[in-house]
Length: 279
Image 1 (tube, helix red, strand yellow):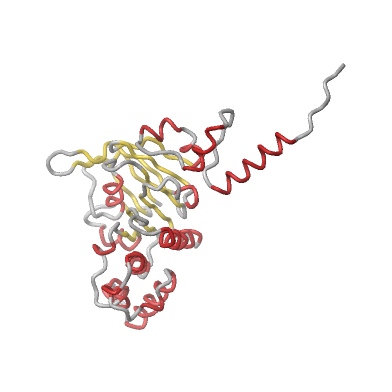
Image 2 (image 1 turned 90 degrees about the vertical axis):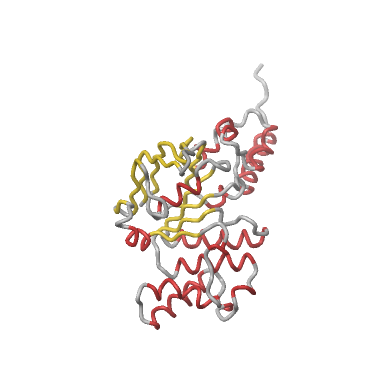
């Protein structure tokens, strides 16, 4: 669905943000893009929908090369959710804000309203349609920003730090929404710092370090190298760190569920009867 080849980008003044990034994102996958501040995550995301155009290298989405000429076509495929919802929502009410995109597609009002109500239901704000946006909580604003994108019916959802500044309940609710969208076939690319959250939802992880891809792969491949994680200025999930007391473990658990199963295995091994020594 997304193909990035040898992508380079430097901001005015010469600050290099991306230095030869290559990346593949299969259709229907859930990719977590991780790295320290300044590693290039936000810059890379903005290339996927054409907010930034590559200086060298290329980006292709759904078989379409991202360029100024294809901006509208690419944005019909890719929905972008900014880190701060206040940068994205602006209409007087929740309903008006969700309707803004579909109306600008030239759809008739019945189709616009149907899309708005469906998108609001998908993110759990169907009861807030008439509410002024300045009366929303921060978490509700986050969900509204996603609803406005969903009403455009994208095939790819790109999110920049979607759980930033949310309380634990708001974080869990938002991540369940993203997981449900992904299970419905949506390709999701999410930039995040939260190493405890990623193993619960993402299938693939890409670590960026100083504008380069340090590693991309499945969870086990990426989190199986603690030294690489540290070089990228991240840490292992807390659950995995708890198992440092077992130096002989070759595979650390990444979630509470994995940890429970691993503890059951370890206890079974410790309690298993031993055969008597031979004469």
